[in-house]
Image 1 (cartoon, rainbow, N blue to C red):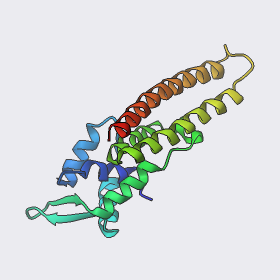
Image 2 (spheres, rainbow, N blue to C red; image 1 turned 60 degrees about the horizontal axis):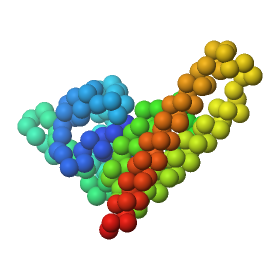
Image 3 (cartoon, one colour; image 1 turned 30 degrees about the horizontal axis):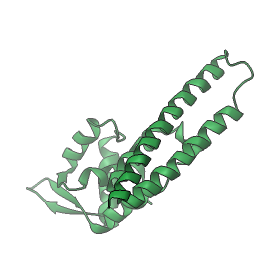
Image 4 (cartoon, rainbow, N blue to C red; image 1 turned 90 degrees about the vertical axis):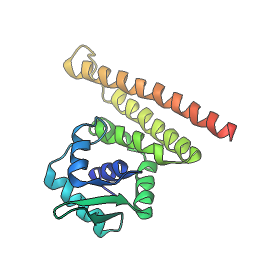
Length: 173
């Protein structure tokens, strides 16, 4: 399984050839991908290349241009198919958003299954918050819990809409 940074790189390389510098610029300009240090990105590029998930080709004397391989596409699909557990949704919202965004690499059936699985995890996260809510909802932790639940309920609404779109797409095929 690829890491969050590696999945971000693979997603950015889908349909594009990019240098490490260009990938860093894309990371910095994106709200959906984790924005790491240059050394983290270059280390991830090396791991991905070593694992055969990307291919590097020299572009000039000091630059390498990267492309995603078929194995890399498959690794990105596997990343997208694995829902983020409810326990991690609140602590890793950027990873959650990335998983939703990478679902675009899936076919309609896979996307539908992925959205349904992630919706179940969002519902689970809401249940976990409800179980751990303090008896005084006016307390800071209670207000924070209510805020988190509202966000997760919005996520449920969003997932319901993309599930409906995926079902419609499958019905028309």
